[in-house]
Image (cartoon, rainbow, N blue to C red; front, side, top):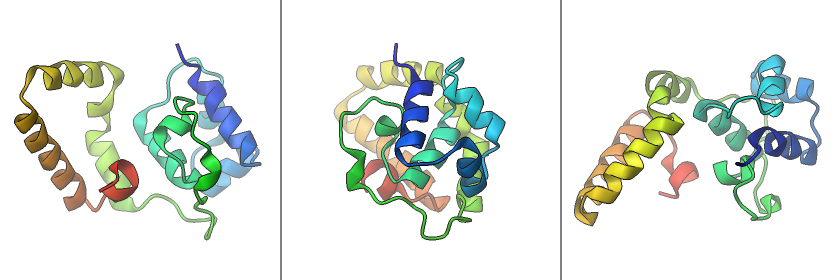
Length: 143
C-alpha cells in the first residue's frame, strides 16, 4: 500500500514549504496537514484537490502514484492568498463523500459491467455537473 502521508510530505518539502507556510497559503489548518502527512489515514479527495491545485500537479503526483516530473507544472502562487473558489468548496462539501475509497471501488465495478457507450454518457453527465458548478474540469481531467 502506498504511503500517502510520506508522498504529501515529500511534495511539500520539495516545494520548499513548512507546514505552517503551506497552511497560511492554502487556508488548510496546519494540524490537518500534519495529520495526513503522518499517514494514519488516507487524505480525503477535497484535501488532495486543494493541494494539487495549489502545487500545480496531478492528484497521482501529489500522492506518489506517478513517476512524472512535477517540475513541468507551474505552482499556483501568483497570489499567495488565493484559495479554492467558493463554488468549488461548496461542490466538494455537497458531493465530496461520493468520492470515498469504497464508493470509488463500487463505481469501478459498476463501470466495468456497463457498455462503453453507457460509460461515455455517464462521464458526460458527471462533467456537465462539474462544469455547471463552475469546477474547472480541464485542470482535473483534461477537458
